[in-house]
Amino acid sequence: MKIKYLLLTICAASLNWSCVDNSKNEDSFDVTKILDNVADNIILPQFEDLKQSTDDLKSAYSKFENSGEQEDLINLQNTFKESYSLWQSCSFVNYGNSTLVSLSSTLNTYPTDVDKINSTFNDTLDYDLESGNFANAIGYPGLDYLFFEGDESEIKNRVEQDGKTYCLKNIDLIQSTSKSAYSFWKENTDNFYSDFKTTSSKSKGSPFSLFVNGFVKNVEVLKNGQLGFPAGKFTLNQPQPNESEALYSGISLQLFKAHLANLERVYKGQSLDGTDGIGLDDYLQELNTTRNDENLNELILGVFSTLKEKADLLEGTTNEAVANQSDLVNELYAKIKELVAYLKVDMTYAINVQITYIDSDGD
Image 1 (cartoon, rainbow, N blue to C red):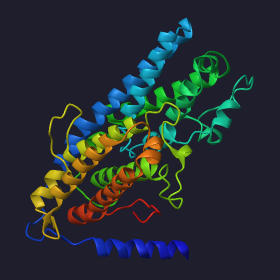
Image 2 (cartoon, rainbow, N blue to C red):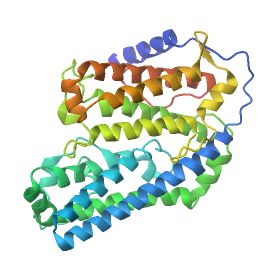
Image 3 (cartoon, rainbow, N blue to C red):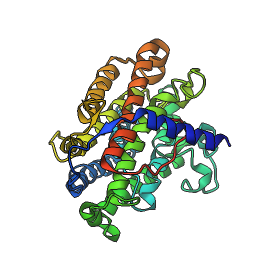
């Protein structure tokens, strides 16, 4: 009964929010223009960068393993940070094969289970990190703990000795998973890449529907996972510091900003180097979609701009910002909620795409 009531509440709220008009223009937009640009100039190169970063991570670990020197540990930590940041640019792609559907769960489930990781130390029995038993103890968050918790001697002991096997297994998992994701697109496995670029349907399960749903859902990850949960938005405004991303390395705000920047790029159809391509913004602009007589695309771009300005004012980690800049964090969270509504309700209505994923926070 509670679930049914919640769904009715969400639907009612959506109806109250949405006041969209694009009746002036017939929708003749070719969505394959967006999909072609997204596949070739966003998804493929960003997965290639992620794959390369995991290769670099493996090399950096091998170098530290051989030397044990502080400078090589620092290089390993910095290489990890770069790879973790690049992951943010790929996190909106949750469609394709089973690897891609579960990509976020494999690479970035947090908070990580420290006790589970520690249980592997000096364990003479073999274990499989891909088993469900380790679902909360793998990916970047696991390495975040391994590489940054404690002082230098504790970290070295973990990485070189006690946690060496786990470290190698987890790096291999991150590397192989990233390579598999890239290869799936690059090699046109099951013709998914070519079909993605050339299918004009907007029905449920179509490439355009998968892209839009993946994108909007990823905006909700920004709102909930990266800000809402640690800020206590789902626990009666009681902050939950252990829910923060990158808890040990302290780069949570760096990851948040990287994610935000990529979401804006994807919306605009821009590649990593800033080259402008056909994006969702062009679709809304051609439709001349308005909300309460204001251009919807301009409203969305305005929110992105405001979010960047507010995020740049935050200092330290997400947890430090929640503790020391609570008013600004609240403003930022409210703005992301506004963005979610514009995208999830107004945009999808205008472009005639059904939201197919389920959430329970009422946006």
